[in-house]
Length: 310
Image (cartoon, rainbow, N blue to C red):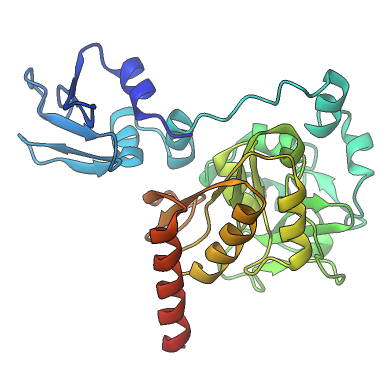
């Protein structure tokens, strides 16, 4: 869940709530320099902020980035509180599902390129370039080790991401290096990146790509495809998850509605992070939408417009 109020409590020593019930929090504007009358208004409902003195305006994420100097994925971490692991999960299951075991044991679950090497151990030029690329995108050594990222010279200038079972993905680290992605010849089928989250958490975020899921946190999964297969949707529906948050790229209106409809029918709570541009991995702002009749009709209308424009 997103919580601007918790962050305000940590960052500002003096703040006030306005309206009843409260819809605004007001603080001294850090951008004015000498504001002592709380001109910066932060909207709890609209996820925006505005200073009525200097004119500063931003989304919640932008505000955190501007105040703290943090990159997007860390600023998101300041606001988005990863749910605690479900209380009914036993310790030995947590150890298995969160992949905290030995690398050689964990990697036996996958069929990876024959020359695959973990990023923290590889010493070739591709590994050096891959580490630089990942750090530039906000993914440090914690991410490499947690998700067992690696390189393989047979896959060229790419980061190799173990997805699940026999499926992996190799992502180019330079824009000029094509194709952008390489995958095993076999179909992805029903594989989902970071699938242990479906067993560990009551609340799970659904992204399109692996890097987007990594940017959100350990309770995020990735579909690894523009259009989820029927078998992937069935896996999501069958999981013991109470609430799903759909965080896909803009214009994926049809996919958002397809996922939301199916999950709602399975008695899951559904929320949508609607991005104007980009996705969780790129740092753009978004609106939080409850999946109700109004949102459903809006997605249907947008999807219809998109199909006609093509």
